[in-house]
Amino acid sequence: MDPILSTAVLSLVIGAVIAFVFFRSYLLKQRSELQTIAKPDLHSDPKKHSKPPQHVSRKSHSKSHAHASDKDSNKRHHPLDLNTLKGHADSVTGLCFSPDARNLATACSDGVVRIFKLEDASSKSFKFLRINLPAGGHPIAVAFSDDASSIVVASQAMTGCSLYMYEEEKPKTANGPKQQTKLPPQIKWEHHKIHEKQAILTLTGSTATYGTADGSTIIASCSEGTDITLWHGRTGKVLGHVDTNQLKNNMATISPNGRFLAAAAFTADVKVWEIVYSKDGSVKEVSKAMQLKGHKSAVTWLCFSPNSEQIITASKDGSIRIWNINVRYHLDEDPKTLKVFPIPLQDSSGSTLHYDRLSLSPDGKILATTHGSTLQWLCMETGKVLDTAEKAHDGDITWISWSPKTIPLGNEQVVVLATASVDKKVKLWAAPSVISS
Image (cartoon, rainbow, N blue to C red; front, side):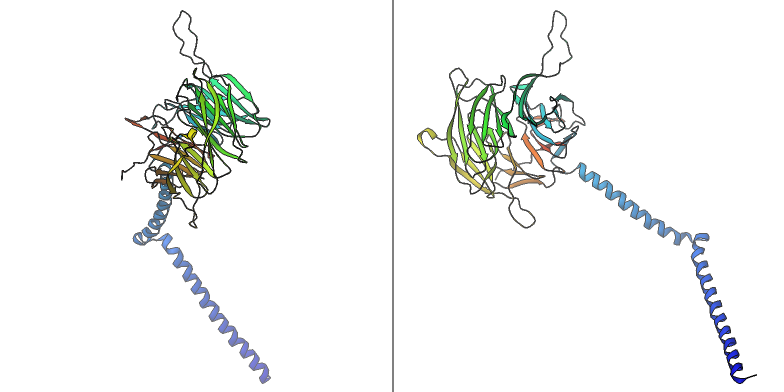
């Protein structure tokens, strides 16, 4: 045999042997690993096997606990959060308490006005009266007229804004016993295209008790333009018009005693008018009274003190001002700035935010404020923050109002703050405690 050929055959044989040995050892190793993996499942050590399930159990328990805590935190979103009025199918655009605080009316974009019975603020559910507006319009604001049985509703439609006054009709009794069934509220008066085709921004009402006023409810509708109209709540009669001449209104409201009308608009100045009453108690005229000058930027919102002698304003200049309007303006005496507070609300970069809404408690001690979905309570004496709910709602707050009187909360009687939002909810809040300095 050729030596070269012999060498080649020998090399192939040696190579084959080496390959066989290597491949066999590899197979044995793989088989050993497979057996090692399979053994714990077939013959597990109780002590060793108990650890993985415990670890998995902790994880799942941790997750379920997190979900539970999330739900609990939502339920206990804030210590002052008392209750939620549910049942709205769309954004809640406005709300208003009745004079006795036992009824809360809401305006909702679903086309329905609901009047909730507040028998107890801690109730699990609240009964409500449902008022469906005429087709084509949806309610944007509400204001009670005289008592809880009558309510004025501002409605927005493609053709413009309308006002409706609904009143519950008491069942007539003949010679028999009084009927217990209440009839649905009926429209007593209505006005259409009241601000041409402009939207209504605010609708507020006050009982006229100043001077010779006869105690009627005066309603103010403020358009997004520059005009404001005063209405007689019971009859729907137009009592007067004013023009702010300030490019664009932000809001308007009437003092609690029905004496003054004040408007916040595009400019930094606040204009105030006096509603003058005749000897017979009717409105004689609406005359210009004074201007509040001091802010450096647009006033976003304002409210009156309970005694109608002060106005609280919030501005985009980052400040809150308290004004004394109990002055002899007929003798050219100017309103005085009593206090100036910086708005204690900043964004993540530290820039001061402005307030969208203001509402002063019936005792005049707590100022409730909003910005977006944030709700904040301030001490009127010091301007200090009493409490803050950073996410009071799951969307922007559209309206806030304090109950004019106390309402039951279990065995207590409390004043509550109501907030409405685009999140389809209305919430009731307790008042924070005010520590005297």
